Amino acid sequence: MYNVDNAIIMAAGVSSRFAPLSYEKPKALITVNGEVLIERQIRQLREVGINEIVVVVGYKKEQFYYLKEKFGVIIVENPEYNTRNNNASIYVAQKYIHNSYICSADNYFTQNQFTKMVEESFYSVVYSNGKTDEWCVDIDNNEYITGVKIGGENSWYMLGHVFWSESFSEKFLGILNDEYNLPQTKNLLWESIYINHIDELKMKVKKYDDNYIFEFDTLDELRKFDKSYINDTKSKILKKIAKQNNCIEKDIIDVSVIKDEKGINAIGFQYKINNEKYSYYYSDVTEGNNNEQN
Image (cartoon, rainbow, N blue to C red; front, side, top):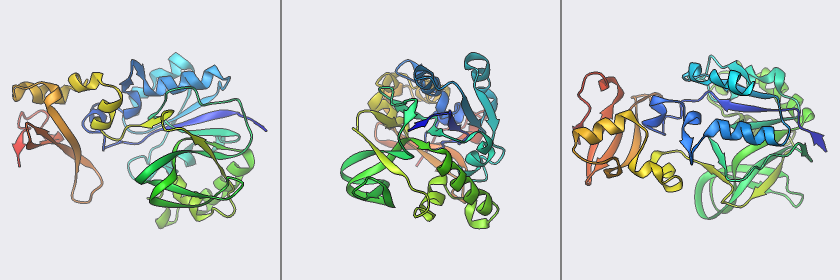
């Protein structure tokens, strides 16, 4: 058994698919069912006695600093949040990683899934009945992960918090430091680095029912979970669009991000009103020219 030292909450990413809410504020700071996502996670960690909480920030980092005063968390900045994948967040926080939870700031746990004592390194998994595009795991008879593939059917897939024992942390961080400056590492998720070394990085699964852990990649997904967003998106941009089109926010559906030619940076989003497609470009926010029918 391991006594959990702390939790690392990764909150540096842009979450561009969560347009346009994530353009206006970091996804981790949206309110779901009356509670700010990251504040809920911090509260749940504190409830089980995990007092040292490290929040890794990057995108709109200044909006997170109130957490330091309100909850006494440690803030670590990831200056490469927009040029590297999430391996950079692990890299900048590595001095804090021992017997640690590794958490995504935008996960919503319906019940507190954290414990102060943990048996072994694990990745949380949820079962998919039918096809899924998520990262699906192969598991041996002892419930160790033996392989991971993107997409599957009737399979357990990765979702939620992770625990690294100190020995796992030492091995992973050693690999990360050895490979960090390689060109091919830049765009890798930390999970991809783990998969590349899965034979030496032993990790079990921790299985959950599908009603315990949630992640919202788009506004439409959030609306299914928190129905208050159907009529009130809490978005100044969408409120402006509704006013300009003489409709209500409920009428704005199928919101999806538009990225630049390289497919990297979000430059706007598409949406539908009364089955008509429109595009909104963020550069037009102050120019008043934000509706372009396709």
